Image (tube, rainbow, N blue to C red; front, top):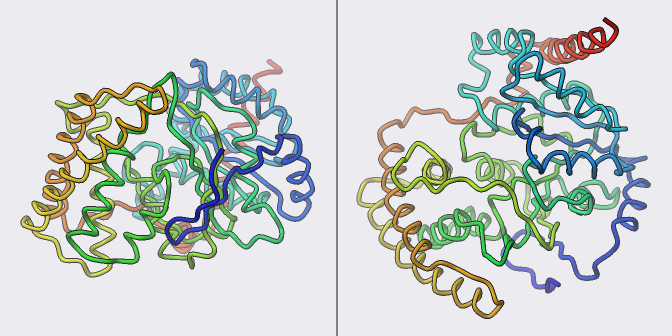
Length: 411
């Protein structure tokens, strides 16, 4: 059971009483009359063949308050798109698949690329961005949740707690970030958050001094959680990264666009586990290594917008400070694990810290080498300015794909 302590400058909503799922859903069903709710699921086709997503769908079937589910489907052929339709058709909610590799959405993407207002690279960020655009285009949901499709410990209580803060008619939160303890199978997980993000934020504070943005980011208990919820108006002018910096980028945009009292974080699960990435010690372009570089660059870019001046010497100081702080954290986590009867491989932890320290320098050099790099996908407000009928075009493409699938069932 969590405590009630408020740390940092962002409101934390705890799990103090272990309310039942049924109790939460009863209230959410009432809230849905005032704030209709939707859910975004960014998915790879391969996840349909795994063990996590089938269980997630079986849980979502029982959710009574959602009026809309939008699934972004990546890396799927036509036959696989049809199979995905069959996979999701058990959902009682109004649902649509965005077949991102289909000819209609690819044609629309090509037009947006020509206008320089489309994502530059494929990935989760691009998938989420198009789903957000579709949500705006349909206008069916006022409060929207988003979570990954590889959560192996999923139950619908996670979604209920995630949606509650932005669905309650008397709450004024525009955005809510989920958090949880990354403990599963007797181990402490979440290495990138524990061993990179938190010690890096502390080292940035030590080197750069007190900055409100760093305090804001350090207020989140699990900044890399892929689960968050928001009000529909958030989607209009948010600019999200297309790389592994997605979660950090979203938090940075919330800091830019909203006062702290319009943002919160909520405890959504006692146990959480998902598909683990390889650490990729010898490949900076894969796994957790690439993730750490993208995340670090995202933080440097944001700090530069606040007037922070970086050079090679600055990055060396940040790396040295980070390394000492991170090693202290390894000892802290090891002691915590022992007291709770968990295992923690100190050698593997310190190897990860060494890699992250090297990647801080790599990220810094990449930042200095490409000062004109624009990692953010344009906001949907800008897209509409460049192509005024884009929402109609997006809905028409998705509906045409859906109709084609329905017609295939009659043949």
